[in-house]
Image (tube, rainbow, N blue to C red):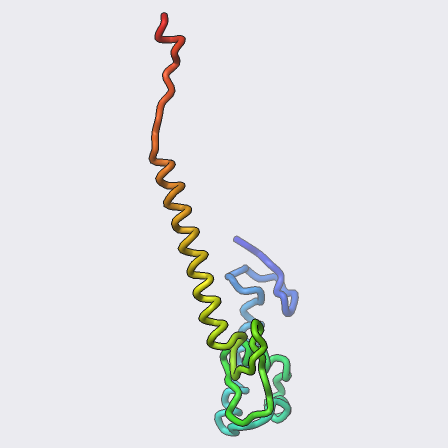
Length: 138
């Protein structure tokens, strides 16, 4: 059993693959739902309007955008930039071109690792034995 401290509230929790505890994740999901519902009813709102109406911090709203859970509408003055090339994007961390480049590079690394593993596995299959020459002479 892996016990850790929540990165957000500091409370001890049983680690389940997330850096924050279940309670903090629930709060984050509730905040997302508030923002989503507000934007559904009020499309084209600015971040400050959403923050004021929902009580969700603007930094958290930007995190939702970076996670790809929200998207900036057409004609908005808010700009997200691709973390690799700097081009303007509407959601996420990377533009489509950089995302494809990263996926291709990752695929090449995975393929390379697989071929290395196959080579190692083949070497493990090669067997030999050592005959003690001194015992044969007796």
